[in-house]
Image 1 (cartoon, one colour):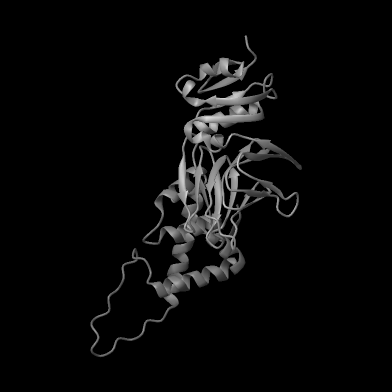
Image 2 (tube, rainbow, N blue to C red):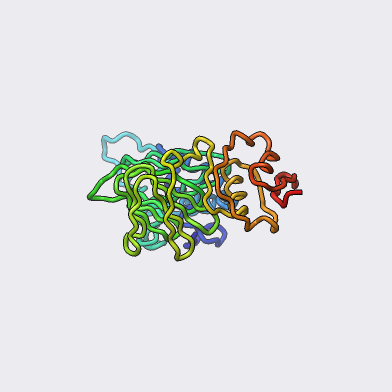
Length: 318
């Protein structure tokens, strides 16, 4: 996250926080998205406060420099706006010009257009995009979108199910940790599991790494990307996005990755002890079977489960 420009008490002003300060001053501000951004990082509130102070200072500076025309003889007494009122549109645009001058047009434009939507562990969220597509986020997931490029998304963490409105003239692009995807009229699931990225197609088709390997995935097909290696996989179409129904499928996942995924999906704190962390697990877990009692994971994963403070640890069977 970049920070730039002078702020309160000599602190730098964060570009994303400044974008939020501007957006939350609008009458139709998205309070749900703002709350998710605040909760995503404990430091966001302080960055936002600095940005609000910087924005208020810029506004005050512009208001002081904008000349007020003298009233005509028959005009009523001028109305003096209270300091807490939002500036008129003309002054608001002037504030934007000042901010562009302070931060540089390229940086400001980028920060002003991109935004991140995140879910907490155990939470799910649906996002309806203005261009007609939609994204469903699993728990502990994060996706970055861009108003300037509405047919583009970046999955930064977790898992997301995309339902893309196909447009041959404007394909929908998804970036997953450097792995490029292009839709061909599609429902597909993207998952970041440890260092690996997984893609599975439920409907239509996806082109993976279109400028390199150019792998086409049709329904029931997928790919696992691990470093520079791409491995094709097959999956039941009914399992694409099955996490929404509590079915978590794993193909060659380590126990450490399974523990990380369970923590994210269910909101628990589960870790794998070093003795089992690299053990490979293949199969599907039905979360309803153990949602109310994590100790039941022992039989399903062939491990022991012990309570560890406010969480659980997977270890060798006793």
